[in-house]
Length: 125
Image 1 (cartoon, rainbow, N blue to C red):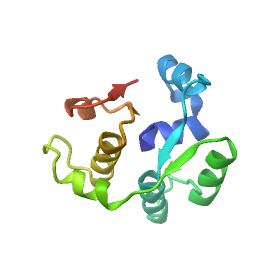
Image 2: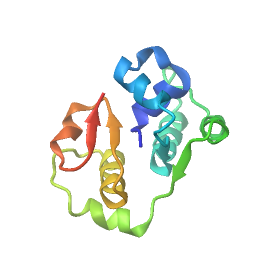
Image 3: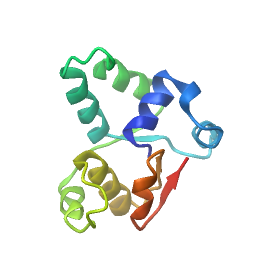
Image 4: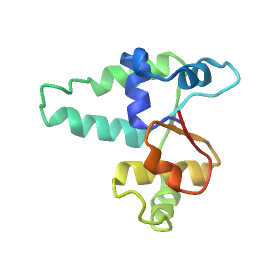
């Protein structure tokens, strides 16, 4: 699963991805997963109307699904798991992503080194 930054870069600015991230995302043995929480975060940021952030969440989601990405919904197990996380990161969207990969046994790909402080399968790329 990718965090919101990597998701945006993969979809619209692949030149910002590290070579390691590009390799992992293009490996046909890896299932590409995005969280519904990332789409929620992007929708909120888009609705703020900042000129430096213009992403159509409908088009982004449709493009991901059309390119065989799998959407992971947020469920109550994920929500409960956020309460078990240390306070390393305060961003609620990052915390739900950590909880999702922990509950589901996935690896989270991120560019945020702070997230690597959590136990589990978190790979900074």
